[in-house]
Image 1 (cartoon, each protein chain N blue to C red):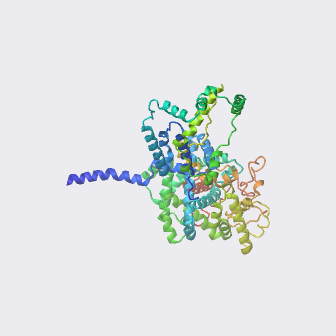
Image 2: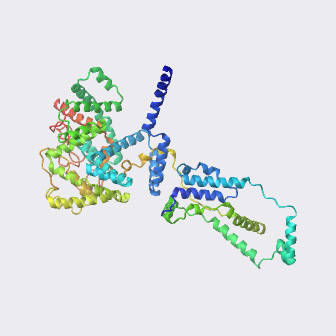
Image 3: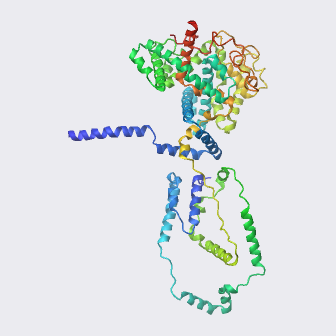
Length: 241
Length: 387
């Protein structure tokens, strides 16, 4: 409970995490996020990540010495049986288990069918309510921010896998997209009248409850004064016939 | 040296209004930030409700929006009134509550102030207007009240101005200047004149008699509108304390205690009103049984009605009868309100026009053009303004 991160921080840090997971991290748009105006911790977290990205971007692209590849291969051949190494390097001679291609294509067909199933409609605000409910159990977002460097091997493996399927199959595979709920910010116009909208007395729908207070809402003090004078006026008119 | 002083004076002239304005009112950015923070504190369900209301708001005309803002001002004044009405010991306890509980307590108290004020004002409406309101839908009621406000009450404005001006000895040009004011300013000026007349003693009997000197001085420190609001409330309650002690007792019993308000403020929003009715009813029944505070037989005849209806019927007894000499009427006797669901306009087609005098006062002999008795009408009591 002590380490609980506010929901707004959770949201922002998820956005940051998503931005860092992209191959070329685009952190600049996040610098304009409204949450930073009120949260020094998240501001400082973003600054740290920006600084790291800046340092990484300023490093020169690594270049390999000429003929390094040949030297490495020669060294490997001297330490391993040449046939094994050559068979690994020669992808054209790759022999997979029997029927693998068909099974992969079947799976891809299933994926394509699933993709056609319409998205279920989620009740408005459900995601936010679930996040609020899960709040206490959620981990500290700082720990959940995975630096790009650590993701590099996973990303490389993923790219290699996709490339493999692209070469082998004819179907296009759409990369999975993580859906993170983003709360819709209320319009400035709504915020300008929020006090009025939040005044329960003005928005009573039950007719009986509304009639309990509606005269007091319609008449101010000057009306009460005039009500008394109206009574006098009517009395006078009555007396005068 | 003199140039230096001139420079300082110039800087002071330009700097002071700016800084005082900054101090007095938060900037638009601050208000926007505060609104955003308030929005963020709402739970998703509340946010959905606000969006729904905002959609309704966007469909309103400019005049309708203006009316909503005017009503919001009324709620604001009722809230201030509610705070002022807290007893000293309750006020001290209230100050120690957390912000959320304070808001909840104040919200319920404000609602009660509005209920009480509506009852008082309804009693001051002419019988025709009361009859028209009975059984009307909320939108119709709004239109009837608005029409009455713009028509009949405007007519009374001239009468009020002449009366107050004469009592205060205003010159003709001063009266003309007030007459030429736009409606809003005109009404403000009428309230100010009324206050002057009361404070200077030329408007006899308007100062509440049960108010001690300290409370009166405290009341005189209030802005004019708040002064008028408290004045009418005190006069209303003062009347009852003098002539209708029984009714005053019931009114006191119906007022929730601070503990009840705190309990209700922590209940889920949809259950608050029902919980409040239930708590008050339990307390009223216990107190009434002990001290014989209610009219005999009243409780026995209401065992099966809902809490809400129980409170509503009791509230009826807190209003003075039309005839100042009339005794408290028991259920079933002439003048007792009908069951809520048996009232005109509640079930089936509204039997309009209702019974003479309206459904709240069945059996009354009021009729248009006839001699009218009106609850809280000035001139009936000793402390009413005299022309």
